[in-house]
Image 1 (cartoon, helix red, strand yellow):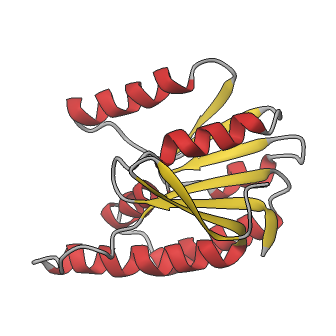
Image 2: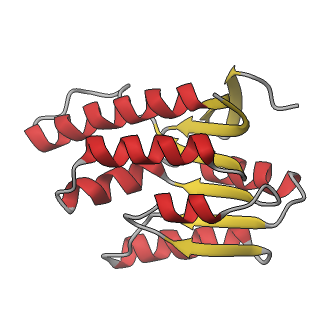
Length: 173
């Protein structure tokens, strides 16, 4: 477990990214945004643009829809890195038919050795209905396993609901 790493978990449009951005900004360190989203349609492009506008200046952005381990390995202790988001990364891996077990293990190893402060955003997808199709059920199970692994590695875990943070592990001090 790494005390300088924070895991921010919540539902879609819960305010988790804005909360995570504020955490990174409060650090006072040079900020790196590790972006996993890909814009395959106008709706997703608009969402990405909204995130970019909200962040404003002061962020170095690394586009990493699949390969997030190498950027984590290059960061120093002088940085804070916001990985937004683990859910999109997992979706990208599954759609690219990558081995998600191997990729998850590599990510966890990179988190353990990452010198930078990390803020990792992910969606909670297990509180809804059971999906009707096998791929969606496979994704839900994989996301649950990934979230458990991320929560285990981070010293602080925060759930964001309706824009309100609730600390599940550690503290925000």
